[in-house]
Image (cartoon, rainbow, N blue to C red; front, side):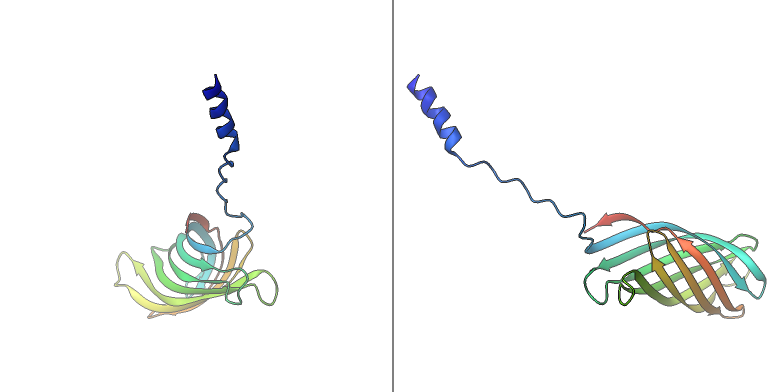
Length: 162
């Protein structure tokens, strides 16, 4: 009986094991892999045409720094009424300064592809605002096809966070 009492006293004397600290959901800092759909309308030499596609983003977020987001974006869109589309690889940079809401730019190279002609290279640049969804304004130029202007919206969904 004395052994039982001693064992229970020893068990109560040990400090409780500390609970692991969970990361705050208010802290969004980290490296993200995101994937999401895009939809928009583009003005080309052929007139207005709808676009739909997707983007994959690898972005480093540091909310309280002047350069709050830095990353790489790969994407593709298909034209709704034309037998062609675009593939691109952009660099991305974003900041919460001066408005307090995430705004940013993307720029990079693209390929316009279709089923008949060879791929045509080009350049593009985008301005965007992040508010859960991402409205964007994109301008660019493509060899042989000429300049384009696109308005659209994306929905990047985080897949992984490190």
